[in-house]
Image (tube, rainbow, N blue to C red; front, side):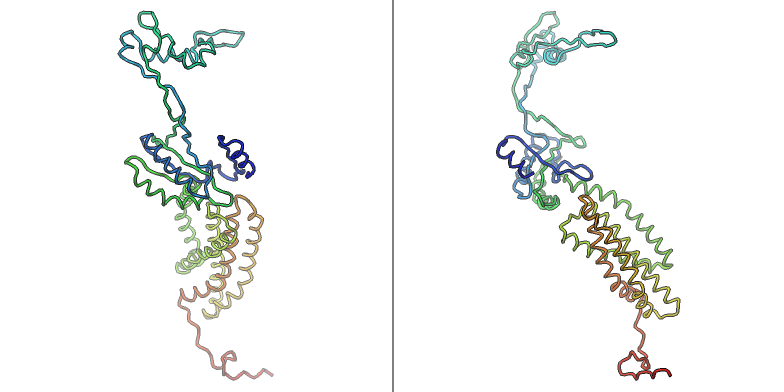
Length: 400
């Protein structure tokens, strides 16, 4: 890609060449984009050029362009309606004559066996290719005579936008750019967004600036997930209440879900992976894994209490007895994510689950028992002086 870019810059400076890696997942035209939306095309172009200038000053962006491209040279036909009405010529007849001259009009059909072939009347190719001959195009009048076009209209060369995009009924210019190798799109996007807000504040009424590119797609994807999260949260809480038989225990287990953020953040920073849509999916899945480990530990504590242990001893014994199952299940999940971490598309999700699960497993073993004791106000039982574990107490004589 670098060699091809250098080739374009050296040998084809007037050609816009763009190289893209094979995209995995939903197609995205440009990773960084901002839209200027409004009703006045002239003012729209003015502010879009300012956005282009601001984006070109960013060192992480390359190939900054807009989707309206450069204005193209066209011929504007301004009909003198007074002269046209005087000779009995309408704007429709002028348009029809020009269409017949340039594109041609259908005047009949020719049948060849079972095929119908249109018979089109139009000017010769040499005449169609010369715009100077437009002035001499004959226009039929109401009296049956004809007059040249130049007597009825003025032909003026002007520059116009070759492509005009609209969004929600308004004109919209999208200024977009690629990023340098090794740079994630959110970095330059959110670096430029505060700077462009001052430009948006100076825009007249009816014109505004919108965020586009990969960040807009991420927002749309996140909104589709967050719409159902409250329902999922209520169902999860109900299932935990059925399992743990107590609302306070269910709430305590739910409060352990954010423990994965610590390890996930460190893992994403170490591997320099972006926190995008797939990483968010991994974080949601990670919350379920962490709550599952907490449920296992809390359930074992309840079983030990029913077996006759005091709550303090039950917390300690449950933590020791469930250490191996929790560690082994977490290790199996982490090892299963290793092949997925080499995927171009699912790598952030796998890294999020791996890092978050490692950190959350350690916290589950040490933090969740302490949280349980603090949540339900479990106190350490008073020491028994006759116990050999109490310092200074006499040791029991061995049995004979």
